[in-house]
Image 1 (cartoon, rainbow, N blue to C red):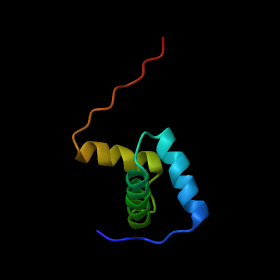
Image 2 (image 1 turned 90 degrees about the horizontal axis):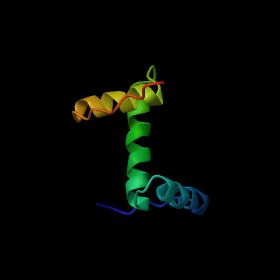
Image 3 (image 1 turned 135 degrees about the horizontal axis):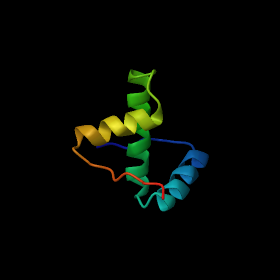
Image 4 (image 1 turned 60 degrees about the vertical axis):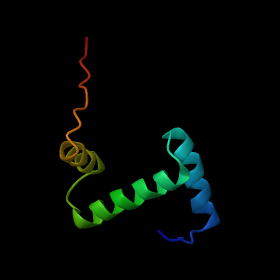
Amino acid sequence: MGIVKIADALHEELRRSSVVMCRSINAQAEFWMKVGMLAEANPGLSFTEIMAEQRKLADVKAPEIYAA
């Protein structure tokens, strides 16, 4: 584990986003870094596709929304 220096404005965005997503500031930063790394490694995939693949790898079954 180490310390990463980031700009104050980015830290503020992390803080606000972490509240919305119910994550700690560190967990939000880790999420953004992981998704960014996956996006760079898989430039043809959308965010939605990246997240679907991560859920599949974790054996998470997201509920489907059915229109009435």
